[in-house]
Structures are given as C-alpha cells and as structure tokens.
Amino acid sequence: MKLLSIALALAGLTLVNCAGVYKQRFLEQYNKIHNENNGYFSKEGVPYHAVETLIIEACDHGHQTTSEAYSYYIWLEAMNGAISGNFSSFNVAWKNMEDYIIPSHTSQPNTDLYNPKNPATYAPAMDTPEQWPTSLEPGVPVGEDPLFQELQTTYDTYDVYALHWLLDVDNTYGFGDSQGTCSGGPSVKKPSFINNYGRGPSENVWMAIPSGICEAFKYGSKTGFSGIYSKGNPVPNWKFSVAPDADARAILGAFWASRWATEKGELSQITDTLAKASKLGDYLRYAMFEKYFKRVGNCIDPYKCPGGHDRESAHYLLSWHVGWGGSVSRNGGYAWRVADATVHFGYQNPLAAYALSQEPTLKPKSPTAAQDWAASLERQLEFYEYVQSAEGAFGGGVVNSWKDRYDTPPDDIASSTFHGMFYDWQPGGHNPPSTRWFGMQPWSTDRLAQYYYVTGDKKAKAILDKWVSWVISEITFEGDNYKLPNSLEWSGVPPNVHVKVADYGSGIGPAAATARTLSYYAAKSGNKAAKQVAKKLLDGMWKLYRTNLGVSSEEQPDYDHFQDKVYVPPGWSGVYPNGDVLNSSSTFLSIRSFYKKDPQWHKIEARLNGGPAPTFTYHRFWDQSEVALAMGAYGLLFNE
Ligand SMILES: *[C@@H]1O[C@H](CO)[C@@H](O)[C@H](O)[C@H]1NC(C)=O
Ligand SMILES: *[C@@H]1O[C@H](CO)[C@@H](O)[C@H](O)[C@H]1NC(C)=O
Image 1: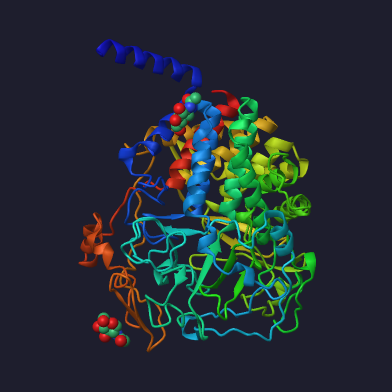
Image 2: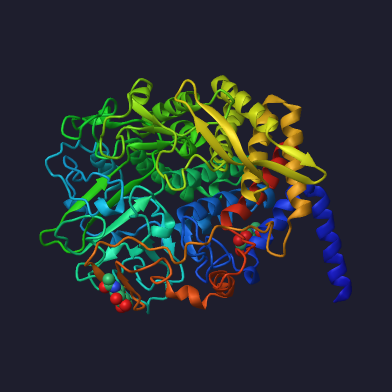
C-alpha cells in the first residue's frame, strides 16, 4: 500500500511538472473548491455564494447563491476541461444550473397570457422610503416587445430561458419556492428562489426585505409582501429577476469551453450544452432593450416619451436587469416582461457578444439574434470609449430614464449623451455607489481583453492600452505584498471624466481579475510590463494568502447595521415563514432571527455589546474561482 501511494505521489509530481506552475495552481485551487469537506457546494451540487454563512453584501446570507456564482462555476469547469482534458464537469455544471436557477416551465405559469404589445405597466421609482409605495401608471405609453414572437417560434414555448439572480439554497428563510412549487414553506428541502431586490432606489442590502418569488399569500401580510413597495390590488403572483452580466459570463464560459474542447478534439462532448448556452444568449437579448420598450434617446417625461417599435427601444448594451412574471392562476391572469433603461459599463461583455454573433457553436437559432449581437458588440466598444476617463479607468454608465422615472437631467448631463442616453456615474446601485468599487474595473475590462486576445480588434486595443497603463501605475509591490486600488472617486461628464483612487487594498478577487486582464492583454500585445505585473500579483496572493480552503485574507466589513430599521409603511404587518414579524419596527436582524444561531454570531453579539469591529476570513465562490481562473489563464497563455 505504502509503495503504491509513493508511486501515485510520484506520478502526481510528474503531472505537476508537465502542467506548469500556474496550471498546477489552477488544479490545486480547483480541487479545494471541489473537496466535499470544504463546503463550497450544497448536497444538490449548487455552489453557495460563500462557504461561510454570516456574510452580508448583495446577498444577505452566505448559503444563498447568485447567478454570479453559477456563471463562475460554468467558466471554472470550462477551464478544468482545458487543463485536465475532461469536459464532463462542464456539462454537469450547466445541468445543475438548469435544474436549480433557470426557472423551469412549471415555475413560470401563464406565460402565454403575455401581451407583447403591452409588456408591463409603468411604475415610477421614488427617492426615499417614505415615498413608497409607488403606484402603477397605466396611462404611460410603453413599447412593444420585438423579441417575443421570434423566440416563441424558435423554441416553441412562451417561457423565458434565463437565470434568476438569487437562490436561498438551504431554504433558510423557509419560503420553499423550489422549481414548480409556490410557497412550499420551511419543510421544502431544496433550493428556493428568493429575492431581496425590491429595496427602492438605494439598493442598500441592510434595507432589504427578502421575499419568495412566488406569492400564494401564505407569508407576509394577507396579500403577501405586496404593499411595501407598490400599491395595487394584487393577486397571487410570481416574478423573476435576471442580472444580465451573470448570464453573459456563463456564455463567456461556454465560449471558452467550445474553443478548448475543439482544440482537444472533444467538441462532441459538449454540443448539447453549447446549444443551451446559445439559447440563453437568444433570450439575453432582452437586456439590450429599454425597461418599458420605450424609445431610446431623449426620453424625457414618461407621458411624452413614446413606446418604441421593433429596435427603436434597443440600446444594444447589457443593462442592469431583466424581469418577468405573472399570475399564479389563469382566472383573470396576466404575464409581463421588463428590460432595463439603466446600463453600467461593468456589465458589458464584448466577448459574449462576439461569441453570439460569430462563433458557429453559439450563434443563436432565432433569425435576428446574431445581427442583434453584432450590433451590441459594436455599441459596447463605443460605450467603453465614451465612459473612459482621461486617466484610463471606466466611469459609470448611461440611463434612458433619469432617476428611473424619465425626469429631466441636469444641464451638464443633458448636453453629453450617448445615443441620446444620459451619463450617470453610478447607474443602478447608489448605496454604495456601483462605480466606486474597483472590482468592477477588471471584471469588465477582462472581457474586453479576452475579446482583444481572440480577435486582435484594434479599437479594443486602443481602449485597453489606456486602461492598462492606468492600472499598472496604480499598483505597487513590496516583496510579495501588493496594493491595488480599492475604491475610486469620480468627477466630470464625458468626454471629461476623471478618476482618483480613494484608497488601496489587496482584495483577492479584484487582484486575480486584474492579473487575468493583464495576462490576456499581454499575450496578444506582447506588453512585457503587463505580463510582469500579472505574474507578481498571482505569485503574491499565492504566497501570502493561501488557506486550507483556498486563497483569502482577513477583512473587516462594516457590519454595524444589524439593528438598522428596514422600511415598512406604517400599519403594514406580516409574518415570515419562521414566525419573524415584519412591521414598521422591524430591523435587519429582527427579520433574520436565524442569524442568532449562526456559528459566527458571537462576533456580532460581542460587537453589539461594545466590542471591537469583528474580522472575517471569507471564501466566496466567485473570489475563489477568480483565483483559479487567473492562475489557469496565465498558465494556458504563457505555458508556464
Ligand atoms: C471525467 O470526469 C468525470 C467526473 O467529473 C468522471 O466521472 C469521468 O470518469 C471522467 N472521464 C475521464 C475520461 O476521465
Ligand atoms: C411589530 O411587531 C413586534 C413583534 O410582534 C411588536 O412587538 C411591535 O409592537 C410591532 N410594532 C408595530 C409598530 O406594530
């Protein structure tokens, strides 16, 4: 036995040497993520947002998961195929995604009641919680949905094929909205669709009021959770929310799987999965449209800005959100769809647009899809140029609906438009501002760099040249330690946007994404400095921050909000599946009593009793995948 294990160890060692240092690091990190004892996946094989449960960021619990985590999972398995030669785990990942986070037919009843000539009813956004709930304004013109008929014909279904953005994997809240089940309750032992998104214009997670996606009026008030954010006379209903950057990232993963499997003569292993990725890309076109399919450009005053016909409502960019929903019962039933008027540079994915317009294995089946994606690719490149600061970083995005209610923008904004849309340095999330976090920079720029690597596009290179020299100038090394930007400050309006780094840090995910961006850029351009910085970032994090579970460093999040009040209109009262009461006295903690049983709760308790701010070492699925994907990409590109 002993001899055998030595022989195996030696064989392993040989493999190590053949694989090269960085590919070997990919495998080490990949194996940690997949080690059953490490807790990255649920018993169903669903990747959790984080191994640790007490974590509050966009999710409000670590054993939720997001479409973001799934998209990293897909990409991770594609690269595993490239490095190990076995693509079966890529198929497994897509199947799991379909099983749990892409709503099945039974999860979206009555989609055939949708009227593409009247996709949804306009509801204005409000600035402050006190102005909630808002009411629907049926008199405001909306446009027609130009994709519906084509998609229905291509796929012979009224359903939407897209990832919902959030799952309560362990059914911690107890809504029990698993596939095909509406308000199944705490006894459901499967991942449950959930949403914590309806938190007004601020998008502040501490104000989030999570609810299930299907309201049978069993939880919450006698009309479920309705009445908090909007007025109306609701009937039992369901609704899903898409975060389009995640769906696009899954398609990017599929693109690489296609390329790498082709190189290895293994394409036939994954053709069925690629057809699904292509279908996802067909439906992802919804992200290119204005929220209510109104005209794109100079869209001021909800009553005056008309609905669009055909592509008049297309901005062709990857917007912040796509949503769809409907009634639970047929009697008096309905269905609706919305896209988004808000566009963030951080969501753009030129490689996915390239794949869906050019790559034979991924071009969608609908007749107009590839041309839509070709238009999107061109528009995305133009958009990066538009929001690029004088220094090189990308600032913010554009909106077709000022303040989410078609207000009149200030003069300086109104005078600088992008295809008639208005510049917004913090589109989407305002609290915290979505463009302040440095991580958005490499997240998006990485895709641009990959697109440049694949095509050699000169326009992309010119944009990247500027970004790369900015980022390199802002990264410093001291031995193995590295510092890169953490948060950014913005001023000005295009073409005079300026950025200043507010503070520096050594965040693992952003560092890994930056290293990967620089690697793809260097591999195509031959830029030696970019390659050198990528290598030093990767070596630094590997030496300094490896843990038993992956690569992570201690952090001190701002968790002084557990007793912050959530906003509930006076007089409204409801109950969570576990009995927690929701009313105008509720706090973040009071509607999440389960946190008091969390293994790390004592840290919060000590803080509430006057102790120091606690520290945490997290293993987020996306962060850990970033490390693996950056190591693997460096290894594949430079064969080191
Ligand atoms: C590929 O990996 C799967 C597990 O993901 C395994 O079951 C299968 O045997 C592997 N195939 C080969 C040829 O190694
Ligand atoms: C909210 O519910 C809690 C728990 O039942 C109760 O103690 C409190 O008085 C309620 N607050 C209001 C404003 O109704």
